[in-house]
Length: 129
Image 1: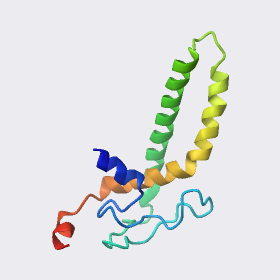
Image 2: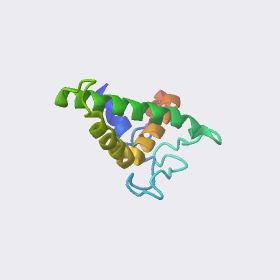
Image 3: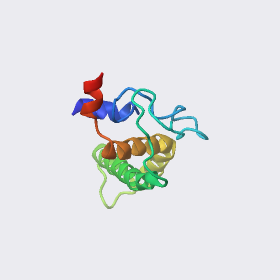
Image 4: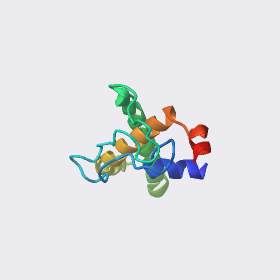
């Protein structure tokens, strides 16, 4: 399980886990999500058909909601938030700030998760090695 998360967070090919999927670093804002056409190691295509990555919007939405729920739970635990207090007005802008900063990384991670859902490790590829 830890190896699976390591493979996701390394932004490597979901088939061979060796080739890079992205051309630039995630913090390169104009070109951060440019992907290679094929994996340099196994030759796996990164886009099945035009519009393949439209589904990553749902994955990105789930990641941002999950991030917000986790930060809110931490905020409640740290501040002792109750419905009578106004601490939510401190948490909300801080959460929005971090979501804006992390958005390029979240978009990239959602693409890797979407690809991994469709491309799995190929046993025939590893037998040929």
